[in-house]
Image 1: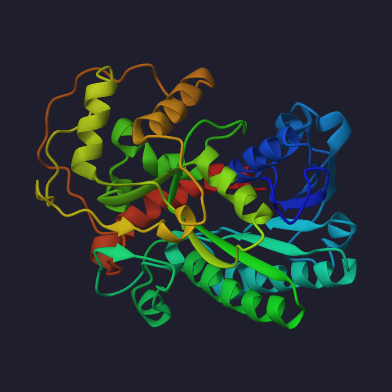
Image 2: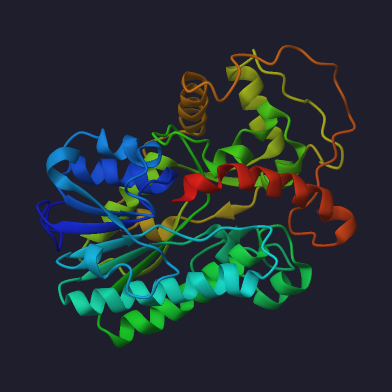
Length: 374
């Protein structure tokens, strides 16, 4: 953007570059003329990095480097000489037997290690962190509207142990630790909080967030509770927001990035209307027809001048079309017998009776797509 703190010719590092968000961000940065140093766990694995190497300008402006959040100093080489860092990578293991040491500690230590790499480089001016909506709304009492001042309740998360609880805890603690470390080392730090990310993609594997977003099409009932009162953002809008805030001279603090709030009932109606070839249930047990919308406010981001480009239909069309092109989604699911027995369970209900079945289903899926989180 004009008047930004950094020119388009600058050098930046993107962690987790092979993943759903990271790869799209790399693509947009290259288009703008940035030189990108992208970290992945295995640069030699062509299956995992081919989509990055085939991007326009990749041959001249993209370098892939090996880095791992669990290895101290692993990001030194990648960050050396960079003006900015986009930290997208995160460990995710929903079935960890030792979440403290396998998920939470690596996330925190890995992030602090990245900050130390920034300090060593002596050139990094701004660090942009991809956080999670799970750092905001995991609370015992639901609010109608959430903003950047809200933080999830760690005691509530740990006591309920809802699916993915260790991921939420790791993101919260890592973000809070990073704020202190960045401040102590005079590094400008921005945290972007996306809601459920939907849209087209260039990764070779099925993106984790689309398992949830497209669950009404796939009939994956374990995920219905997550979109019961859902908030969404287009992948491209999210990546554009990353760059917008990185380039903005006055950007600081936390920013929610969410363009649409809806309920599972309204989402089901939209999908039925726009994609009649897919069977979408019309009745969901346990869901009132007039269930209220829960909003994530992007007022802080839009007041900075950022504009969202995509509608809810746009993001789902992009996701569905890409999935069909890649053979990850059937072209139709036909017409199935209507059922009123689909019960939607609240993902924040951590009781074993309500949550164990959903947890196991989600865990199986996360195991299948773990490699996409490089």
